Length: 87
Image (cartoon, rainbow, N blue to C red; front, side, top):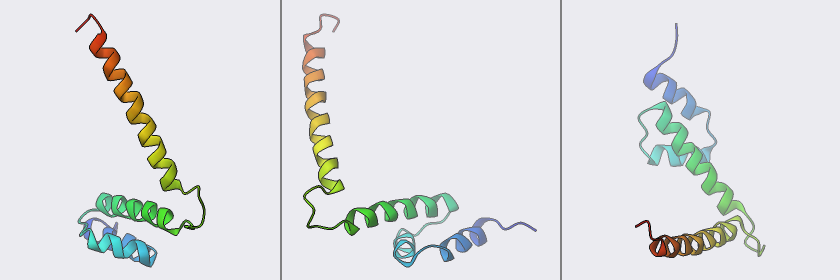
């Protein structure tokens, strides 16, 4: 006999680490996919916050720098598109 639906979701939740489970419960998940998504978000958040704040090279700093660079590139591309005679 297979396990499905709510039983499967509950079984997966019981196997999660406490800090992930707390986030999954707060997210009020209803499906296995919801549990997996919420647990993935919690894991990513835990990795970012667990990084030592004494390091000047935090992953979050890298993400912010990448976002800023991507924004500049997007703005340059937008300007080029506006100059294009195809519009």
